[in-house]
Amino acid sequence: MSETAQQMARATKQRWHQGGRARRRQVLDRIATGTSIAAGVFLVLVLLSILWTLLSRGLAGISWATVTHSMGPPGSGGGLGNAILGSIIQTGLALAMAAPLGLFCGIYLSEYGGKHNHFASVVRFVSDVLMSAPSILIGLFIYQLVVVPWGHFSGFAGAVALAVLAVPVIVRTTEDMLRLVPTSMREAGAALGAPRWRVILSLCLRSARQGVLTGILLAVARMGGETAPLLFTSLGNQTWSLRLDKPMASLPVAIYQYAGASYDDWVQLAWAGALLITCGVLMINIIVRLSARR
Amino acid sequence: MSMAPVPRSSKRQLGLDVLFHALFWASALLVLLILGGLIVLMATGGWKALTTFGLSFFDQSAWNPVKDRYGALAPLLGTVLSTVIALLLAIPLAFGTAFWLTNIASSRLAAIIGTAVQLLAAVPSIIFGMWGFFTIVPLVARYVQPFVNHHFRHVFILGPLLKGPPIGTGVMTSGIVLAVMIAPFITAVMCDVFGAVPPMLRESAYGLGATRWEVMWKIIAPWSRNGMIGAIVLGMGRALGETMAVTFVIGNVTSVGWSLFAPRSTVASLIALQFPESPAGSLRLSSLMALGFTLMLLSCASLVVARCLRGGRQ
Image 1: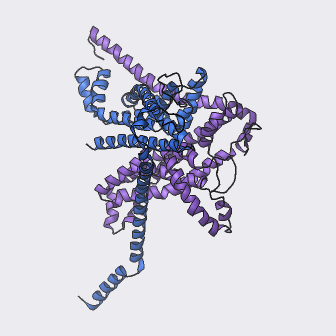
Image 2: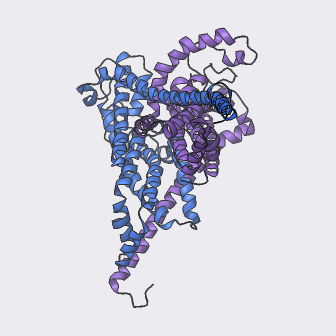
Image 3: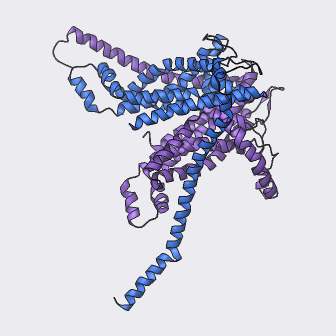
């Protein structure tokens, strides 16, 4: 190699390794990488901090009495049993209303709502609007729609409010999952002489079963933690009540009432309830993710 | 369809087909009617307040149940300010996390961190409220506020922005809590958007010797600009309407001012707190409905913007 070539090579090497643009680029890359890892770690730490706060404050309040006794005045050894039962009843009833409606609407959008079906694209958009609508407004809406005409708060109104929250989630997942079913399967069904409803219900829906169930589970998780819409509809109740036409307790509303109280045992119960509800919701999400991976 | 005469059984099938089509169609219509009913009932509920106060409803700062005079300025300002703070904090958090998950982390690590971020998104909002009240509020009151009060008191614009009694609740605190609430949502959408960049572009840039950050900033970010803005607007929509988390940490005082550390209220928190004291048919309830209607319009508008930018659903 000639002298000049060697010099040039050395110069290039120097420019690459010390100072100059390359160094700056490398440093910038390090800084950016480090910062973004820090951002991700921060979010994970927030999750851990929330879980730690819940466990450290809530674990002491969880006992058999917490889930079996009804809410009571401070110092009376009350629990959250009626709130848990109320939450289960309202969520179940809401699911019974929302699941068929969301399912059918999702089927319509996927099976009948092609590119040129303007009605379907409007419905699709409306469902998205409903999904991102503030939940407190859903509560106000059901208050106007159900509570005002009836003249009193009721567990049924709470269930309707939760159903309105759940429908768009189910619609979206049902449509997305049905779209993944290959067209050839529909054609095969039709070729065997099956009518369209049969193809949809027995073939498409059946093969998309897992995904559709996932959507319904996610909707349950969303309903379980909602507080704002229940404040104006089922109101909350201090005693055991199974009547749907009367105010009904629910876990999130009970937490909301107790968390701001100045009695230690109420605050303790609020944290216990918060721990229960978070565990439930996160458990559903973990199950969904695990089954989706399989 | 067929030329042959239709047998009876398939006639019944045809009838069932029509019936099911009608059922599916009616369900879709019902979803449409739910939103229609929501908007109409909000508007009629708030009609009394809007006709009583007219347009001055939106620039009156007083929220005075004693004199029965209501203005939307204080809660609207609270909503806008806390949403802006939340976005300013959440955007870098989400962008960084998405960058890490899609470009840096190994797929094993990314799966774990991704799950954690998704779980954070699933935590109910009331839990965020309680956590914020017992973790962030003392932190702000004990460390952040004394610090900024001491150092920035006399700085030109920052002084009045940052002053306030060190009680910890306020717009800034709710902005922080909202930021960690919406960051996981924005992260998830951003990960999807970054994943949609053609691998060819990415690999060519690496082949030319670009660093990871250069690939991110000069190739992926410009390519997915619209998608990122869509994700941010989606997060904004959530922050605008969040109720429970904000109610715990904002202090709930209806006043107007520029200090970020003073207790305020937002549209959603005001509705949640004042509703139980507002009898049916009162002007107060109607004012709350009018606020709700405004919030609904804001939420709709943010969704329309997000959809236009994302170019429909993915």
